[in-house]
Amino acid sequence: MDTSYDPAQLRTFLAVAQTLSFTQAARRLGIRQSTVSQHVRRLEEAGRQLFARDTHRVDLTEDGEAMLGFARTILRAHERAAAFFAGTRLRGRLRFGASEDFVLTRLPEILESFRRDHPEVELELTVELSGTLHRQLEAGRLDLVLAKRRTGDTHGELVWQDALDWIGAPQLRIDPERPVPLIVFPPPGITRARALEVLEEHGRAWRIACTSTSLSALVAAARAGLGVMVHSRGLIPPGLVPVPARAGLPEPGGVDFVLLHGDRRGAAQEAADALAAAILAGGDRLHRGGGG
Image (cartoon, rainbow, N blue to C red; front, side, top):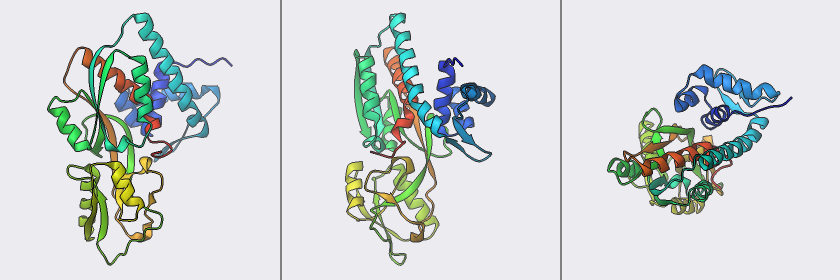
């Protein structure tokens, strides 16, 4: 049978694939949850199941994983064609902030595609801790931010949700009788705050083994066996693994990755909207397959 792929349905599919939640996808897109279900059902009418779902969990099937690449390609072609025939070219200066979490991901590929599609946009990139980026956005020094927020907070546009894990070198062993050696960002790091909170809530002693604003430096310290760090499960860097449950470390909970817009209008806002759309379309590329 002939199958056509409606861009609206593909955007809905990507939102569900990235959030693994029909509810969160509806919230992100500003549509009803029943509409999300209808869009997915239409895409599955070709006879391929895209999601395995029950009352508690939504997961991509093998066909759903394959659809990710096709959906991104179709949407990008659609958007480029629309921009070409509309005769509009984005211009201006766009100040974009990304948290340290994305240093080892495929974010550079998304930015490269954006620069290729919009060569007249002057893109300025700031890489910082999430808490610092939030403050810079509030102060008007950034136009768009991709960063973490605590689960349960509502500010920002959700890109995806993830669990947090304790991670370290494969050979690392945690002595339950000694303080937990921590590898952390400095304040106002969100994962730092979460690590200290859960350890203190459970009465576990801790000590700081390494502090740095650089994710690469923290990863190097962890690979050297200096200690453990709390990190997004979907962004675990190569060479590091989740700490086994037998170590007795308390569950650190979850984290949201969100886009936040500044207050500027005009060309900067149009460019920010275009980059936000590109990040949302390719958001699964930021965390699927780990941090490599």
